[in-house]
Structures are given as C-alpha cells and as structure tokens.
Length: 170
Image (cartoon, rainbow, N blue to C red; front, side):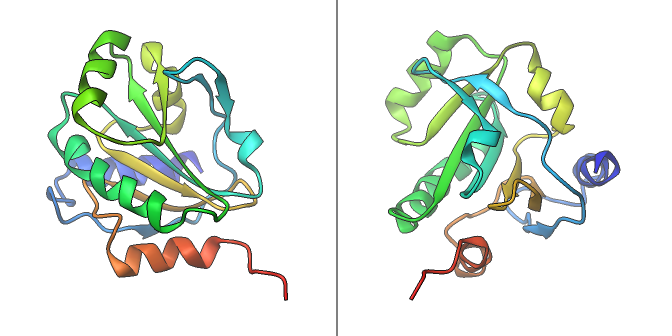
C-alpha cells in the first residue's frame, strides 16, 4: 500500500499530472491508513467510523491554487450524492484555524474540514503533493487516488464513485 501511495506522489513530482488534467486512478492497495483528526468545528472524526460509506479524503491547503479550484466540484459531488452513504473529509495541512476559517467564509462548502497539525496524517498517507485525494470504499479500502486538481463533477468521475456505493435493497 505504501508503495502505491508513493507511486501516486511520484507521478505528481515528475509532472506527469499537469494542473487541471488529473485523472482518477484505480488503486491496487489495501486498507486506508488510519485517520483520526479534529474537525474545524470541534469533534474528532475517525475514518473507521465511516465504514459502510464511500469517503473522499482530500488533502489541501488554502495557499494551494489547484486545491482551491477543485473545492467547488467536491461540493457539487457531495450535493449530487446527497442522501446516499457518501462523505467528504477535507484534511487541511497544518494551517492556523483563523486562516482556514477566513478562507471558508469565501469558499462556501459544507463538507467536513479536518485539521492536520504537524502534517501527521499527510505523512502517513504519503500526501506530499497537493491536492492529493483518495476515494475509500465502504469496506475501508482505497479504491481510487489522484494527485492534482480534478473536476469531481465530471460524469465519469461521479459514475466511478456511484459504482462504489452500496446497491439499494429491493
């Protein structure tokens, strides 16, 4: 799994994923690394508590232009999947809370923003290039990863996420 995460990070460092041209890549690793962080609004969130949901884990920072640019599409994806077992966890890399709050007054999103002081989570996920995103299946395994800005509202991206959602019982 670590090698797979390193492979995605390496693609970003080699410039193989130019800004705006990132693609959601199938993941061949195992379970997602642990994630337990305090949210900007206070409570602690643990990835293990999201078992049974598809989760988009996005590592970002306010100073990262591609991160800022993709946030509206992450919000649209969340809205498209409203009422379904889907969540977005946006992990901010080690920025002061005041800066994040100020940024969010201008960027209207309602997904969960987590704080990663010291970049501990980013290091365990090997998220060295921003934005770095991982789509976690209902079983807690990473199913897709992407380094760089992605339009999360694209039909092909939405359909890949929807395929991971539990099938409705008839």
